Image 1 (cartoon, rainbow, N blue to C red):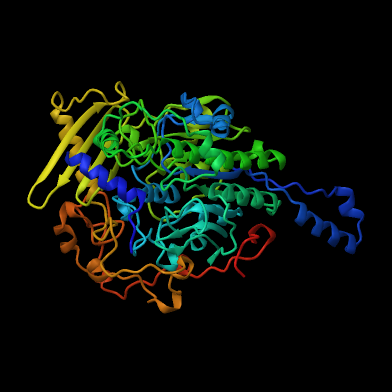
Image 2: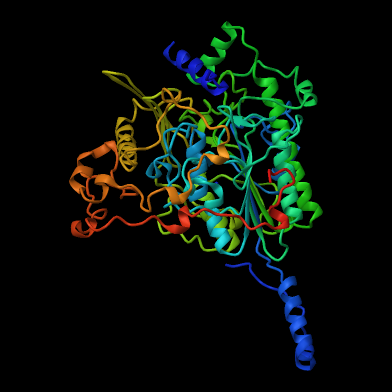
Amino acid sequence: MHRMSRFAQSVVITAAAITAASSWASTEVAVTEEAAVTATTAEIATIEATAAITAVDNRPNVIVMVADDLGWADVGFHGNTEIDTPSLDRLAAEGMELNRFYTTPICTPTRSELMTGRDAMRMGVAYAVIQAWDNHGVSPEEHFMPETFLAAGYQTAMMGKWHMGHSQPGHHPNNRGFEHFYGHLHTEVGFFPPFSKEGGLDFQVNGKSITDTKPDDYESFMLGDEVSRYIRERDKSKPFFIYMPFIAPHTPFDAPQDLIDKYADINTDLEKGRSPGTDGTRLLAKLLMMDSARPLYAAVTDGMDQAIGKVLNTLDEEGLTDNTIVIFHSDNGGASYSVGGADNVPLRGGKGDGYEGGIRVVSVMRWPEKIKPGTKLTDIMTVMDVFPTLAEAAGVETRNTLKLDGRSMWPAIAEGKKMPREDYVFFISEIPYAGYYNIAGFNDEWKLVQVIDQKQTSVEVENMLFRISEDPYEYNDLSEQHPEIVKMIAKKINDWRATGPMNAVRNSLVPPPGWRAPKDWADYIRPIEKLQPQYARELVEVDPEADKALGHKGRLKYDCIEDWRDLSDCYPAKEAEVDAMPEAAPEAISVTTPVTTPATTPATTEE
């Protein structure tokens, strides 16, 4: 029998309440000019071999850490005194707080924008998360950040939650630039064994499920252990790129008993979040006499911080702290609805909302060699900016063929250069149910929040306009005073939504009738030899008029241009478009068998 997840429970409660982120490379070779002149042939060979082994690449290591649903007010450096976050506080004290860091309001689109530096709308993953029963994933045509670092000579690894596709070979992390993958394809797999999604095992290493976990293995601690092991056993001649996305502090909550006991008496009477999704669900939960989620949320957040601390300590022990970039951010605003337990005050709203509490998130960046400690970036930085920023900081070429939507913020971070945001950024979520949209469009000065409720025979649209430069907590709705600005931003939002592909990920709370989950998600992806050699296309390549006729409804051709009114650049020559369909890029969908090295052989893999 299909059981309703805690997130699904929150959706039901929410629905009810609504109705009621230069080159540094060099090598050091210990060969003197005298030795090169006088050495014998054998000695020269020995010296050359030794030099190759001991060469040192001085480019920075990179670690990207992502929390899942962390609240703005739930870290010490934002004033919280009830939940212990010493590791995150250390990063803030030793680095730079990215004070206006923005993500999408929900999980999958944020991770997709992080990995690609591109807008989730044009990739078809903006509206909703990828569910276990979905066939969707980020297209293999997209270039991922780890592919850039791998091509630049980095060793690459991922430990944690994926949530960007699980049904096609090109969706798997090992085929997206990660040599080593230790983690989950899905969300909500649990914090203790058996680590499953819809009953199917979902904790794997490079395509093989882990089957020898112990009952007290705690997921956050396991990630900390694995990242630390990987760092200690790394190839010391090359820098590393590590992606560490936690499932914490996402529901369903669980934690070791000592952490549960530690927060049993935490204050649960939080200030209002000033959004229906927050305040309405909390009120309803009280009326239904539900236990507060705050104590367990705090325990899970503490556990995540401890895992981060273990990684930071490993960097210290290995002498890598000064030349390692660590960037941390949440994937969206804290889940401040009743079962989520997070607190975003003074920001308005929370996860799923277009308000600041849903999209402005906790974020810090540390690189002791280059970033001044205890500093703060106040310019807008989005999750799409992380890829180009890290590439410039590390001195590597992005290698993208498709247009990057993010921009490098490295000049602002490293040099204090002002980088105003005059163009608009857009985010959306179709939460809590199909046809209910929370949308934000903003730049440095203005922000429009739209709430659209699309019913069977009617549509309700609410526009709220804020001068965000002066009103960061969104108290004063200026939509009536400035209708022309509302109209201008609303048009931009409509045009932005029109860039998305027609068959995009959309909200689906329950599986299709008759759907069954696999027993083991590591076996779910079909081998490439059983699939067609081309990506499916249908009308896409041959009918520009049909595409244009769709208008704001979306695009037939993937990654089309900005303005749906003129699709000439998408279809430059109709005759050429009728040619045989292009084959899928081999490197994007090939089955990867990771090379077994000391740094990629975990202790708990099924043989």
